[in-house]
Image 1 (cartoon, rainbow, N blue to C red):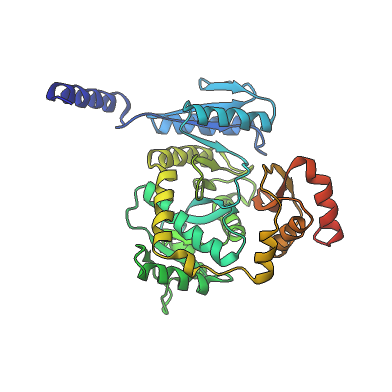
Image 2: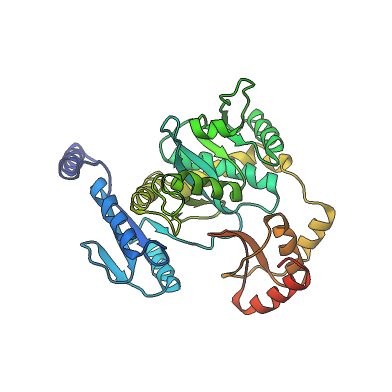
Amino acid sequence: MNAQSQAGEIFAQLAQVLETGKMGDPVTVVLTTLGSELGVEELVRGAEMAEAQNPGLRVILVGPPAKTDLQVIESQCQEESHGIMEELLASGQADAAVTLHYNFPLGVSTVGRVMTPARGKPVFLATTTGATAPDRVAAMVLNAIGGVAVAKSMGISRPKLGILNVEGARQVERVLRALAQRGYPLEFSQSVRSDGGSVLRGNDLLTGNADVVVCDTLTGNLLMKMFSAFTSGGTYETVGWGYGPGVGEGFDKVVNIISRASGAPVVANAIQYAAGCSQGYVPKRAAAEYQAAWQAGLADLLPKPAPEQAAALAKAPAKKPVTQEIAGLDILELEEAVGALMAGGIYAEAGMGCTGPVILVAPEELERAENILQKSNYR
């Protein structure tokens, strides 16, 4: 590029800053508006707030007709809305999406973002929906890597990591510290309690001592609800950025999740969170982080499946698209239930829905899957 072209580009960027107050390319986020307990109007209001707060942002609504100046693509059901959302992402007409529910594939979980009440500091919760791995410890280790990727994409160059004191926390800490010793760059936070350490107590959640808090998905989901809706008594999420983007190896989209109880302020923040994740290239950042972790020897550090589990996996039916949810399962029996379906010749995946753990199967296998689960006393 010659000097004249460079000067022209610089003046064009300056003109954009003067006009919009923001440097860089505009970002388009698609928001699906069906499914909220608070009504379509609440989500529309959140979208309008997001655009008003960020002049470099454009929001496309997908759902019923709405009284708004924003672009609306009409849809009358969630399945159709998701189809339109996927088309907009695939075609490049949208850079990111915010929706109330999304069937992420196994290996992908969402990284939420909350405002801690003691010091008003944002914290990433890794993770809040989805299922990163069948094994709890392995899932939390991978959650840590995904959480670091999201934090870096949002501008925190050296995020401090803490592990919530839940089942498996000490094992997760050992794996992550060993990974750091092998060359994968990790920085650990310290508890505010007198005995310190990187395993966090409830006090540390309130103070926001860590940039990224690692936990299992069910606990993360619960924490999101507590942090977001405690001021309203649980009926309306007033603060935070929602349940966050899905992150996992091979997942190349920016799809952020909100709750059916997310109020307009949270919807607005979630849209801006999705835009930030797009501008920070979350999928590429996550891919680089996972690659660096594997190169540092992560595979040698993760727990190995028991012989019977390995044998079952070897005989598992071929993978297929799974879009039908089966709810009403105990989180502690979720993986066993998936194994029972696999043993019965049905391909299934564990996941986390809006109301708790779910199993995902192909629609044509739903009835047979439910029969197997009932006979095995999982439902």
